[in-house]
Image (cartoon, rainbow, N blue to C red; front, side, top):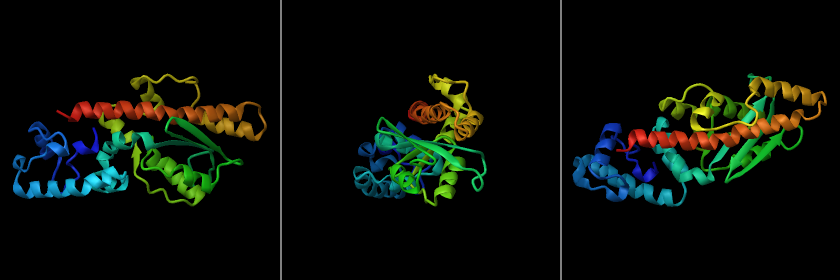
Amino acid sequence: MRLENSYIGVDGVGETTERKLWERGARTWAEFDPSLCGSTTADRIESFIEAARPRLESGDSAFFDRALPSAERWRLYEDFREEACFFDIETTGLNQTHDTVTCVSFHRGGDTETLVSGDDLTRENVRHLLDAPLLVSFNGARFDVPFLEESFDVSIDAPHLDLMYPCRRVGLTGGLKAIEPEVGVERDRPDISGKDAVRLWREHERGVDGSLETLVSYNREDTVNLVTVADSTVERLDRELLP
């Protein structure tokens, strides 16, 4: 689904009205006809479309992030997929105040970059790489974003699609590792877990050869796999919602 299929951002338009518009032929903004609904709703829809078209052309993802209900943020994905930044972090534990971010991977436009603590994992680099019209993570709203904000004194306010929630909506439950096989992802090292990521960092600190390389590889795989999870989840939502 693209944003031009969406009416749910219009004041007073819910899922039921939106579905009726689709079923009556208004699958896109260009196909909308005021006769398809009441005059008040039609006026609101036409005003929204008039405001939204130039925002979409200019790539203003924040406009649609504000307009859409938070549960519908996944609708941003198709329009901003190519510029989206997929990201994932590894840490020494779960406490944002006392534990440390060890590495962060960012995947955007087919390229993946990993920042490592003690090397290039700095506030400036984090801010630069998260400068995107759409951020995509898995459980990042509760974990990755608060951790990064606390650790690097940054404010992450770009539109953020946390895939955990749309995944649940289409019946993909559990953590990322549980969901990946359901969407066709096969890992190079399926035996490594989040606990192993903590162990690998501790081994790296003790000078164990290969531990950092394994940790970085694991973190990058987590990040790149988000693309397939996002593609599959949005496709399933499309099939579920669009007539």
